[in-house]
Length: 404
DNA sequence: CGTCCACGTCTAC
DNA sequence: TAGACCTGGACGG
Image 1: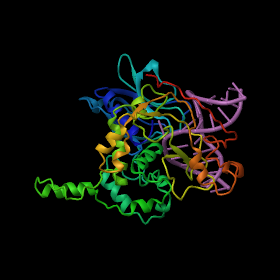
Image 2 (image 1 turned 45 degrees about the horizontal axis):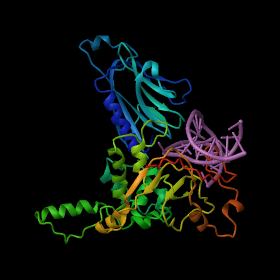
Image 3 (image 1 turned 30 degrees about the horizontal axis):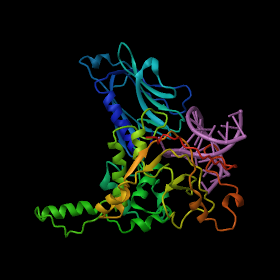
């Protein structure tokens, strides 16, 4: 599930399904989990959730009854407890019947119902974690979605920090400044702005100000009366990287539905929303950390040496509907960058690799005559995640569902 | 069957 | 800045 939008949707999910539900007893952990026990036991309690960036906090609140003072046994909570979750690569919450517990339900909260149900933290890969009596992780910055002004402030006031020497695509994953941005969001955000991923972060951020310039503009317009002074320099609403770090994740929240989770039922809406990440025809390279960066066009000057164009998974195939494309383009030709949304007919395919033309980007940074693949043993990001690939796989198959 | 890939941190050399 | 931490789906042989 897990970038900022999915964490927030998870908190909405918890609040919805747990509304009016009474939980009871102890919080139980799976045998296999290495995360800490949650020492909370209560005859009757409620669960609510909030999110911040890439964390979710559950609050367990004991329900007071008239005779509670007498009834509270030792070992029973009478105080609320917060449990803070990080989702790793595969975490999510599910509310189910007790006899239909999902596989990998590693932390469980049981309802006080005759036919008991369970709120579970499910995490297939177990990269997620929780912290009993937890607080928001100290080194994480403000939420890009719901603490927008302090998020801006935090970035703009630290631009001299040396982390901003790094390529912008790598800095966008730094949760100290971009809490909530992950691998698909960085691709989508930079794509919308046409910013090459491997240019220094400072160079694209240094012109930005603490206050969102659109907000400023609104304020000005407002004070000027209702006069629609078009003279006020119409700034392109999609031109500010920090604003896009706020807006793009909110778009995913407003899809209302499933985020990226191939294991789950309906994520087709999300797949259609993607314009760049894992989209056929886009380029990709490994960043300095071995993570796949999806982009279009120029990669920028700071591509890591030896970065290979990965044979990353293509999840989305989009098909142009060219019939009226040109006309529409002219009609709305106001700003180049707002035209990113090509008139498109999209097809969500099953996951089928096609490995389109990634070679272009890859060849750019081949300085020697030889390919990176030939000269260097490929850097591997980590043992489990990326074993250095030996063989080239080329498959030319795409699920052909483009019939019509 | 085996290899490669995946929405993210962590910590150890 | 490599690994470590994990499971499982897609794909290739």
